[in-house]
Amino acid sequence: MSISHLKISGIRNLQAVEFPPASRINIISGQNGSGKTSVLEAIHFLSSTRSFRTSELRHVLTQGQEAALVFSRVLAPGSTQPLPLGVERRLNGDVRVRFDGRSLDAAELASLLPVQVLYSGTFELLDGSPSIRRQFVDWGGFHADTQFIQLWRGFRRALKQRNSLLKYGKIDRFQMQVWDREFVAYGTQLTAHRRAYIDALVPQFERILKVLLGDVSIELKFYPGWDSKRSLEEVLLDQFEREAAQGFTLTGPQRADLRFRWDGVNAAERLSRGQKKLVVSALRLAQGQLYRLQSQRPCIYLIDDLPSELDEPHVRLFCQFLEQSHDQCFITCVDPDTLTEFWSPDTDLALFHLDAGHLTCRQR
Ligand SMILES: Nc1ncnc2c1ncn2[C@@H]1O[C@H](COP(=O)(O)OP(=O)(O)O)[C@@H](O)[C@H]1O
Ligand SMILES: [Mg+2]
Image (cartoon, rainbow, N blue to C red; front, top):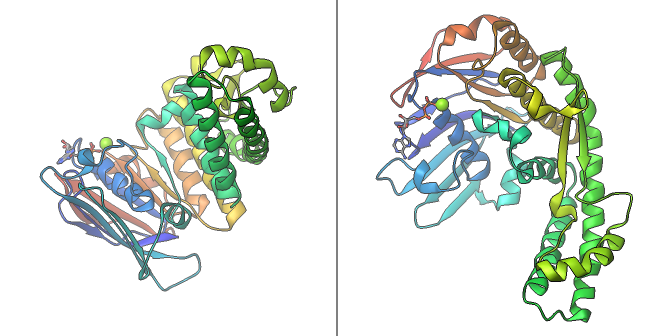
């Protein structure tokens, strides 16, 4: 899907922002604090009912407002008939997602309008906690295979039950065996899906990294969460005494992670900030490209402050890559002149400017 019309109300400092995005490249410029990241936040909200900056709605809501509402018209690939999609969340907890006259649940919305976000917090994919990398892998798993969500939920349930048995001491052996079986069955399948996803992602990642950052080669490896030379069943048997003493499940798929190495060294320790930005960008772009390959549907890219940390040649390479991707992009920057010269005249491009929450269209 791509967005052909967007109307934002009740988000941060944005003042009745309404505009028709271009089908390909949208550049949104403005000074610090003008609301650029908030526009991307609003599109993310439309795609998932959530912000990427905070988990608390009250921070996203314009001060004094009770509700955030993003209304859009979206186009399926190849279609010329836009369909209405609206997402509203209220301070009292109500969430409403309406698409073409019916309500959608969270999973349906996630499949309808997948987005990839690149913003300052995305660096955490390299040097943040493993849970951020698991979310990244599981986003891919979720979109690659409809079975994935069942496996993920089944595994979470088994893990939660095991942990509560371990935590409250007096372990009922029979109950434990039941949850161990579920843990192993779901955990093994979940891991196979995660591994298959990363196997498919690696060639995309390497290809894009070569374009964006030719002289750096990063080895990306999946770690399943336990010593994979052994079965999950053996691992549970082996660690049971220690788990009983500590009161929670030790190793397993809940500890899965990704490892990035450059010349055999942890990449996060070696890369400069600009290089990190390009590596993380290559990962997110690879995820979007793989999504397109697997589902035949496009992803929307939200790229906050594209030029920051990058020199001109790398900004150019980044823009060239986006132009060739055929996907819809929303790109923000402080000075529009840093980004306007890289696009071919045939590319459907729109320029917008934000001034204290007011958005205006600019001539190309
Ligand atoms: N809940 C809120 N209500 C009203 N204004 C807000 C809220 N949260 C942030 N702001 C203001 O919104 C402005 C836009 O922030 P942001 O989108 O991060 O700007 P930019 O990305 O252009 O630098 C900032 O000036 C900030 O002070
Ligand atoms: Mg910003």
